[in-house]
Amino acid sequence: MNAVKWAKFVDSNYCYTFYYPSFFVREERADGAVAFGYHAHGMNVVLESRVSDADSQRQLEYIREGELEESRDYRYYVHGIQRGGKLYSLALYYPAEYRQCMQRLIWKVKTWRCETVKLQMSQYAR
Image (cartoon, rainbow, N blue to C red):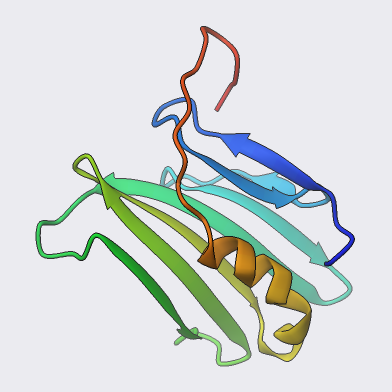
């Protein structure tokens, strides 16, 4: 992952950005999330972003990590940022055995700032 080229995703609805490995493929989600994944050689890695209405009980920013309840063979790393009445989250799901290989992606999620951009008409498509 250290030599990977990064691509930039810009959400045209909420005007925020994040970077993902350029060889990841966009995945359609019915729940409104944006996801890019890599599924090859028995490995499934997904980088997923979603925006929801903020709950006043939530912190302004958090990071969580752990094992997936459904499959202890997989781990997650999530960074959430509350801003302007919305909660933005960026999550990485990956096989536990590849934790060392995922350090660069984990670092990208950990240091994500949910930067916003001003879009020009039809500059980016969601």
